[in-house]
Length: 135
Length: 200
Image (cartoon, rainbow over all chains, first blue to last red; front, top):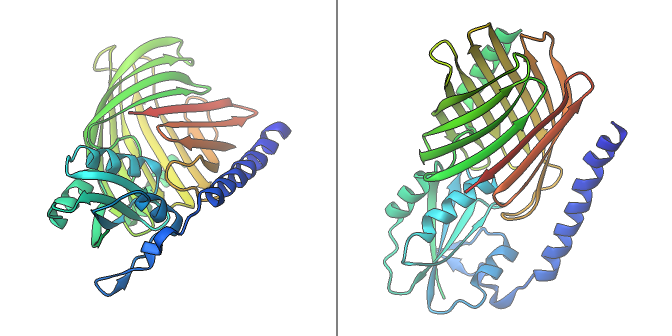
């Protein structure tokens, strides 16, 4: 039992320390795109995640979708798999911290929020807001 | 006690409902469970996020039997908020031994990125005896990982099977990364409780 309790408290602490370290190593503020205003509103995203997502992307539209009910990796996986089937999607990522889905589309793609809503709801979550940023 | 737990859970999840025995649309899940009453291997497929169908192979330690369940799980209710998801599921299984062997019940959970509460209630009938099997589980995430990180939950589980009597309560650890989840707990009376899950 003592070993179990030690495991309970030590392992999460060690893993968290490693995660924090990794995040700091990869942090980048290249271009500060997350500070751009979209339709008069600032993007509410995990800055590190968003910067990493847009790094290397050119001539793309980034749809930032706010999603309700997205609380764990399984929810995120389902959404990611669904959007990867869409050939107009160049890249996708999920920001669990802020409840956002980032979707990169080609510049000539018409982004249809109703279609996005249907794709999100097919996984059991609800899309509530769309912001589009052009790179 | 069992009815009180069920009523509490139903009231709670009427306000806030969600769960995990169903995958995302088109997703498959393979689960292995080992506990003091039985070991099992369970595969299910979810055509939509609303329901899943599957087969569970059971090694029943109490009755010293082996059989399979053909299982059906249906999402009765889901409530999504900005920071939480709650589910209430109906679950059922029909034994390969025939209509005399079956179970039905409810499974629910409510989860934020930090907190988790879940319950399970099953009414089981087999050719030898009828019984109920139930648990409640509370958890906290000691840190909040991003998508794709290694996730950890520290939990406490209390369970009761009417074949063996009283409630037993014990700590549980849950680790989760990518498609893989492992959960295990230990209790002096019931020994190990282990659950492994893989989604694809």
